[in-house]
Length: 124
Image (cartoon, rainbow, N blue to C red; front, side, top):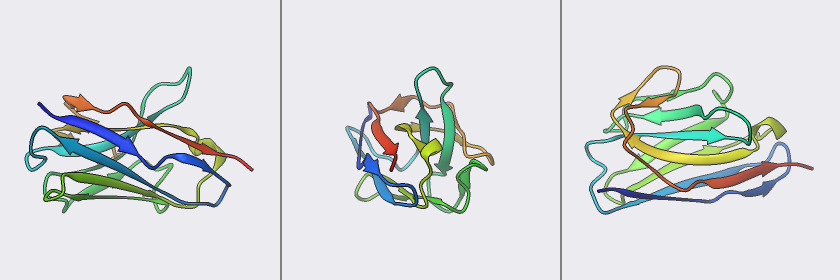
């Protein structure tokens, strides 16, 4: 069993940055691809970025490419999402998930575990 807990969200002005963190407990991350999703009220969950088990492969949705960076530290059981140049349309609840398939559009599939989410609000 794996438990995931996100943190690092908050209120930021357009153009600002945040570092989202996902802390894992209960099991090793070594065998999981990891991903970040976001979901706003009334919207479908959107895959934002994913990273393979070793960290050598990272993928991003077109909407965040060049602005967001995903990384992981398996020894610390942590996954990060550096979000820069934030826009109002990035406002959402961001979730991390552990799964097995990281696709080129930044979506993680076959995910078995996910956290409770952290709110990111971009507003002036």
